[in-house]
Length: 157
Image (cartoon, rainbow, N blue to C red; front, side, top):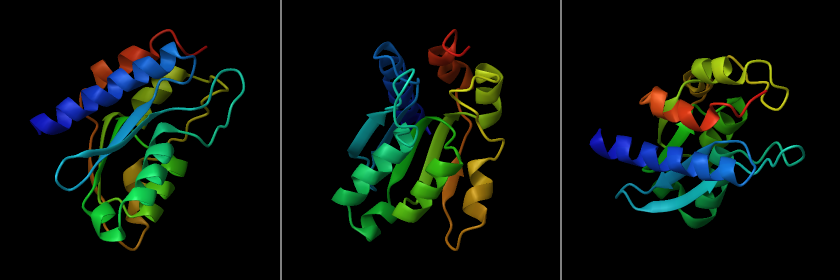
């Protein structure tokens, strides 16, 4: 659990860096089964324009899927500063990642973003998306939500 918290803090720091660069404050990384960081990305949806499909989680798992075998992906863990949305959960499922650990829940994120049109978040937990698939993905979270909320404070309209 200590390693999970350390890696979530890396994602939160990446989310803060991403915000400073003018994009939405989200960060994710993926580790191999042995704990090596394989990929790490922030959100790539610069305000006010950008590609809304380039969420941190999707970018991270897409990159990792080009580097790892299906067996290695099944042993990997995706860490995220926030709970993966429906789109990212689908990408996590289809790339074959075996475990997800996140900091900020979708419910808490909605409290922070309100009705900001740049983040019309779903109220649909990643666990529910994964539960409808044909394979199991372990999910841990939310963890350290107060820390994960900091990069979002004052960002959303």
